Length: 163
Image 1 (cartoon, rainbow, N blue to C red):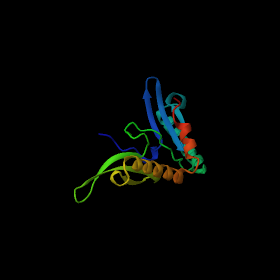
Image 2 (image 1 turned 180 degrees about the horizontal axis):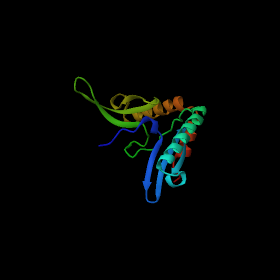
Image 3 (image 1 turned 45 degrees about the horizontal axis):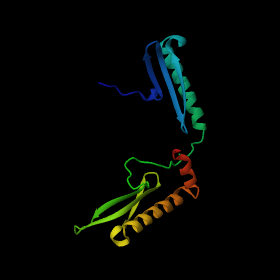
Image 4 (image 1 turned 180 degrees about the vertical axis):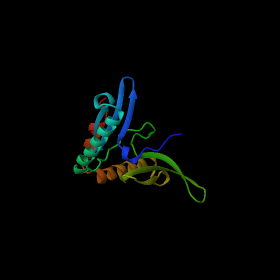
């Protein structure tokens, strides 16, 4: 049965692999990792290595707290193997209304902020196949412009693989 890790050991893990025996300390801030191994042999035993690891962890935590957190950059997804329309965020689908009729449409989805997803659709019966698709693509592009700014499409080109 697994035992709960003590809170005072947070950020410290034990490594016993091959010829490596010691305590490994890790700290993270703004996507960067700081780490150090405290070897049992170099520190004079398992207990001494653990004490040195704890001291380093506490000192590292104080240093990392002084580094101001940076907001995570929004990434722009450029491809998805499940996409069949050729435009990410736009798909052809069928919606079933409460009265049971099925309506074909192009559905558009986007994420205005992390954790929030929005969507809308354009009816193929109302606009026709080509016009509904064009409206969906235009709406998706407009939403990307509003979320990421006017340089979104130049950033997208940079991320796309060179053919």
